[in-house]
Length: 72
Image (cartoon, rainbow, N blue to C red; front, side, top):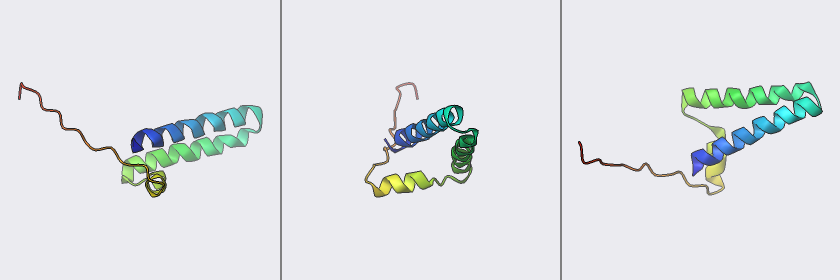
């Protein structure tokens, strides 16, 4: 659940900032770059500020599901 919410927020931020860049001011692309930089940073450091914020709001992290196949 947590990863889906984070991806949804990031995608929403990117789309909104692109619309704002087209219709309001081109400098909104800096916000798009900021979101992209944070996504890259979290993939390298395995730390995400949005994850910490959402956990404080009670969003639960999904449990890893182990699937066993009969061919092992």
